[in-house]
View (cartoon, rainbow, N blue to C red):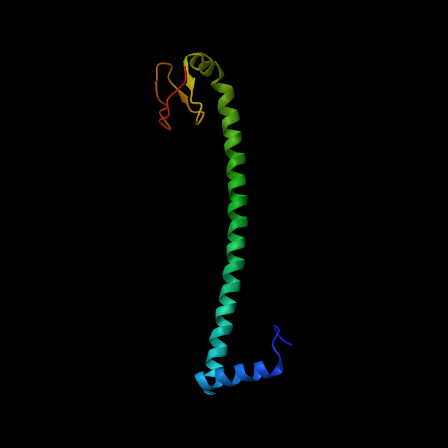
Length: 113
């Protein structure tokens, strides 16, 4: 029993397919169906490979960005210390804004005082 169908049901299905498509078109139908399944499998594998590649590229970019931030943070520490006293941080997005600003320059949400 295939998919819960007995031999009689399978014979009926094969006969209906033969009547609809004809014996000359069945090889073409089988070939096109096989190519479609192959293309779908390749697409699924390609998609998963692309996701893995994107994740590894993003991780490499993040690591490079962290290195750059650490290097620039050391050199700008004195300037940031003076500016951070006057800066106001947005509670919504965390963006640093000027001390007199009423709204965040990045997301537009009101700044709490």
